Image 1 (cartoon, one colour):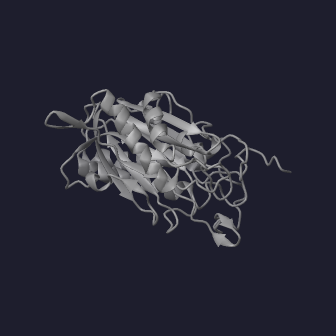
Image 2 (cartoon, one colour; image 1 turned 45 degrees about the horizontal axis):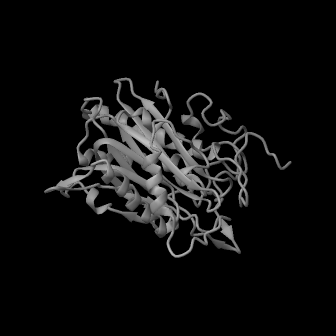
Image 3 (cartoon, rainbow, N blue to C red; image 1 turned 135 degrees about the horizontal axis):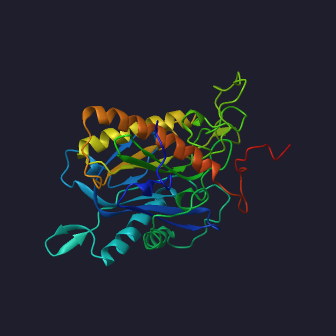
Length: 338
């Protein structure tokens, strides 16, 4: 039986810290996963509308093997500026890929669309994401806020507010795997018109309400519930995530881990990976356990990547809190509008 780590967080993977910075007036923010030592990294993009920086570098056949941090940001393409702020903060402490006497922090990034969520986006000449990225690194810790925080600050799903979620799993062999995700899906994390999460079969304890599966199961559960405005399917979406482990992985194995973690999107969101989502998973392998995964181990690791990601997605929606000018309600175990 799989169990959660002590924090039920991506920071249960030794060698990782998470920092958030947000602006609630803006209804947007940045989350950064900081690697205490450079970590092997890869990425898998399955959504049709991604926004990214430095993802080509992560292909297994390319030269640079490790990264210093990974950024998840709101702000659509404007949010890619967050990586520059993260680079600045890491450069101050001497981090980065050595090129002669210089060091260049390697910071891949991905964004979600939260520009039309009720926040004030009149930021003037330059967007604030570079500064938010810098602040997020300075705030990096093993403990961090979830829900309406960081990159999840302005996130929405089809039915409830989205948010920043995290979860972890410790395998029987001692390897730990953790997920961090900003949930801003075109689709829904809940089943039909109920408050039951699609991820319910993977829940550990009462981490997202312990409602289980609905009984009886709704006949219309497979009907699509997606974001609409003025009769049009909305483009303001994308779920972006990090899956991480303390196992020793090659870059190609990290790529396989990212692929497996996308199964968690499919288990927790209906629909997922649409042409109007930029769904993406970064993978990090810190190697801090010193354990190399065998082929058999990797079957368990891939399954845990999917279930851990599904749980993190549900927790992101579950943990969201109300804020001024919200367009969508927050999840609760009961219908508060009745």
